[in-house]
Length: 199
Image (tube, rainbow, N blue to C red; front, side, top):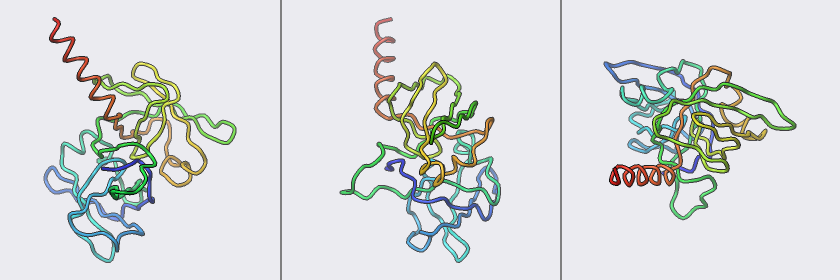
């Protein structure tokens, strides 16, 4: 489990394809604290550490993960939002994040406002919804929805988040990973099940 509070930006130092899998090597300051089999969220995608050496640590994304996320678009030198799993007993500063990306969205607008930035995203209708003041995870960052429309929403990014995540590199047209609020997903499924039963 994660909280959506990014610990640091890691750098992609190597990419290696193997059949349908992509091995991703990341250089990160907390590399020496990692162990094999630990979970780390990369742009919101929970991946298992499979190798650690002097250059960094390696995780493997399978084909399904590459299809549902933006990890397949990574290039050497890209920065990735990183978060290690939550330590039980510590404060939950963001919201409950599983590290299971639901789908991607496209950034369709960026507005610089007085001391912050407003990012707007459009996503394909796959049964997921947002609500104003609700939680959303974008590239692993726990955020609050500002405007919510069908298949579209926006979030406000404060300077600290802008500088300490890869939001500062996002451009209109870029693809981001979305994990919708787990409570909202359960409520949506229960309502749909109830409607199907009535029919």
